[in-house]
Length: 205
Image (cartoon, rainbow, N blue to C red; front, side):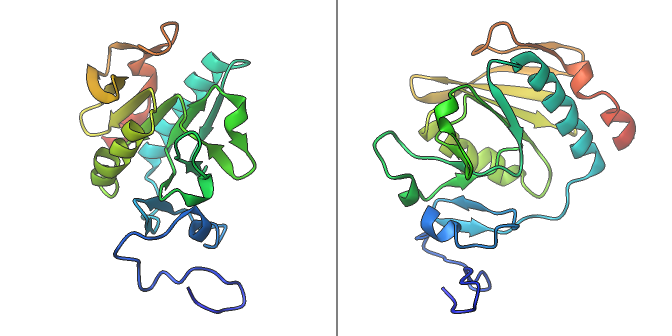
């Protein structure tokens, strides 16, 4: 840790053994879009494409409309502190930034972000982050009990739905554009994937 006047973590020499915790994460620059994964800090990638922003906006709008008055819908950047009940959240080695998240337990809402696992997470795959989203982040969502994860694939216009069953994720649906996604966790949530990918196809084409 460096000794400059702001006492921010020095990231030029990243921690290779994964020893950082939320305590360290909170000492990074507050306007930095970073994630803490298995004790290692990850710098932000380059800015999202316009197609990513279009899809992010479409899904956020659909979820906000559906969950209005019942659950809260947020999108990145919002820190999600992943820890098990009874653990000190400051000791966690995992602070994630899902693209979109749904929180139905208001007790998890804090000025710093979400304290504990969301009920639903949506990740939009981009080349710079796909390996992270499908690898360590998905494993952390599974470990800490996120009930349902949607993985949105931009190249083939599909959504893979992961459901937590007996502590392990199963892909229960792989749906292409033109289909209706019905959430297994929220049976009344039905999403027309044409609306998700609306204007996105034109943008990529």
